[in-house]
Length: 470
Ligand SMILES: [Zn+2]
Image (cartoon, rainbow, N blue to C red):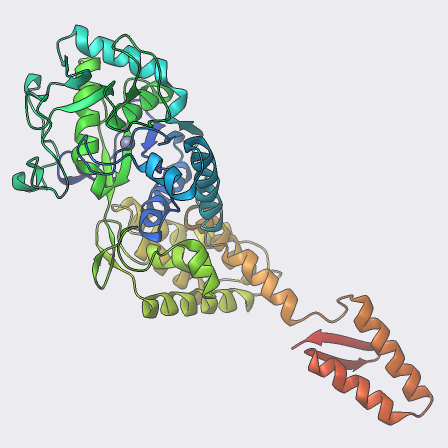
């Protein structure tokens, strides 16, 4: 598979440390609020990559953290603690907030058919691992203590800025809004590994450590959780592009300083979802969630389709008009699949091969999901029997997870349901038959109209009266 690697800034052959095995790490959500659909775009595209690697035969193990401690609201090590902010806003404890929004995140994922990673680890579960990692960094001279905190010393590295797509000026501390310079730092990009001097008087979660009671910095959790579950050689690290710096840069710095060799060979970043007013964020404009899409009558899978129609390395612009188009496209696809007779012939494996090859080639080329969706349309047009079409759609759905075949089966059932049983309807039909027998045609017609008003059409057949929903 050819996959763009943010580390080398080019599309390259995806090669894993061990043949046919793949370890994959995903930066998980900070659980202080609902995820917005921009965040979820990243998780959808990562899910497609996860599914495609399995589809391609990899024995994949994927881990994800849940940031339930220590993520400060600015990208630097200052600002407000997001978890604490959420707890204050909702008058709950930090752990109640974490539980509530973790559940909400996975509920959204389920609606979008995003698989749960094999390992899900809350950051608060791994304090001993962070302490051990930080201790080694101190011993190796990559970290120092100052003002009560432990810092990573970026000047000790041969290379720090590995994601060169960023403007150096943007990286300069102090340029970002609301970031105060930390006078304890020796170098501007140094970052905190362990805090003991919380600027928040009511910091709720604290643990004992060799450097005093405190809590871990944000970056350390991903390195420690990844190594704990996926070992010293990571094949693939995923995340939103906004995490590339400083978060991923710092993950690399501390992991490779700790390990003494390259840690992760391939970095996969998903670009932002924009609205007409710019990058989507929780603080700006309408807060777009999966629940809001549902309230407005959209199927979350139509949003999944919307994301798949675009490449993960392109900015995607969200608008309600685009969402309408995606919903229409989804409904049309379901109708077209519903029109296929699944019992038409037997599955012809040979006829499947070229369409499968087309599908796989699309995704093998830097995960071109839009061309993979085109392959779905090509199946619908293909000159193969119904059974083969359904088999192909099921095959592709292992990766796309749009649930077209199931949705179509449901639609077919709803449409043509002579013989469907419903006690109340059957009772009315019986009453109508009785009225007809008694030559009370006015009553019989009234019952027919009553059923019609409920969307039930009666069909007189030699086997008696049947009905269907119209
Ligand atoms: Zn991370």
